[in-house]
Figure 1: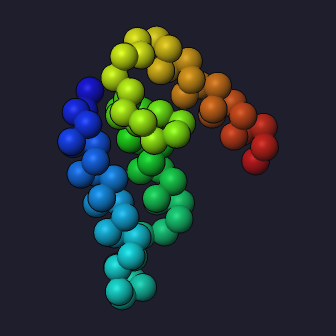
Figure 2 (figure 1 turned 120 degrees about the vertical axis):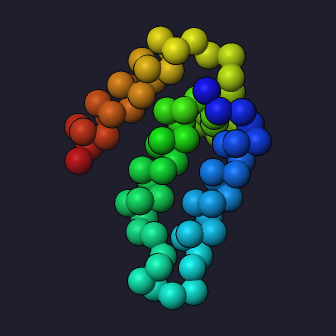
Length: 75
């Protein structure tokens, strides 16, 4: 599990890479989405961006599975 500081640093890196001056160096929206999902999978942030380290691993895995099911039905 990442600490809140590590999560914040990852978040800042995502933002920095999404605002690169040169278009070729800028990350895509899909990459941004995947990285935010990865942050959530690492149990750093919850739905509204609050640090959330109290959830059990099983609860987090269930949430990820539910989200993935919803996404797959929409797409």
